[in-house]
Image 1 (spheres, rainbow, N blue to C red):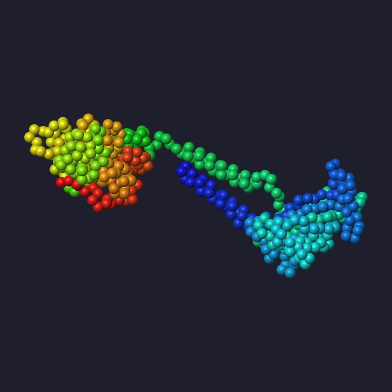
Image 2 (cartoon, helix red, strand yellow):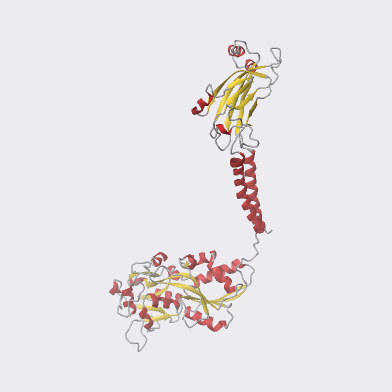
Length: 533
């Protein structure tokens, strides 16, 4: 049996043993129990010899008399407590005597005669009628007879008896000779063991059963800890680790996530021979590389894209990985923080050419776009401005128009997200777009709200922020379960991988309501529609 199974066994024992002990103590064994305690058994002679007792009071004890006026010889006193020490109440029908017998408990005092007795204490005042003249309470032939008293849980009563020595042990008997303890005779139907009344003792310390149970639980915990330490193999690779070489390509917007995840995967897998190649050329470029370079070897390359592939690539299998946010970025001197979809359409359609037309600074508008094979550009075209599909490159330096360029917006193109951000940051009046993660760390840029909404997962979830897309991972066919490609994809969607995705401002698809579609709630009518032709 391996250590993991032993840990499970110990855990089950740690739960079952206390439950069984509680059931045994309070349901089976201790369910119905009648008990007694001898709380005092002393002689008047003991009282006489007490150094702190006054002589006149000790003498009074020696003068105790019987009912006929006869002085008691060597008197003694017994205080007896009868109690319900079980888990349920005791009724008069529960006493193990004949139905017409009014006596439930009898108390004998070997070597002594009962001179008198009285019920001194009741746990509840409503028990008083149980000791009326016709209740069965009496002294007969030196035996105290106690009635069948109904007792609730923890209820009790006390009986004080005055006794004298018998059996030829009169005045000449040794007053120091000990008496035999009282014999309490009685029983309960269905009680503990044979149902007989049992002597109980007040608990001044911790019961041995409780000590044993605590020790057992401590041993269970120590055992689990030992198995956990002994069973841990720090050199063993986790389930998803696989060796080999893998190229990660595609989306530059998702590149930071993939680089961090690849490094964490390599560190996690330890001695596994793992090599990652990074070749981020844009979503469309990544898919083309996957198609051309795989050549049937579906374990060598993973392509990540912002959005889904074209329909003419049937051999590429998609897996939704994350829900990604994008944002518009603007040069900080432009003086604009918020744009409506209509204003964005006018900017990219060439109808607004100066920032002062939308409440900003007196600066010409310069557009910085991604190349046509960019997934980020595809998201922008689909969700923000469909007219940008016809937006041509009109500038190389993002400052001047190319010679012979027809009238229209000044638009330059860059090959990666980082290049777009750098160009916008250094070009007055420039505006561009990128993944939220990359733009959020830039202090030389200003992130633009769209329709008053910041780029947040909550806003996208509620359908009020339109600039988002699903991030897909593509393989050429189905990779073998033990391949590096399959292992890395599983790693990317497990706890560690999800933490990395989330830390970069994305939301793992597994956390969405419909992880297969991996998209937020449906957008409101009009949200995300292109506002310019």
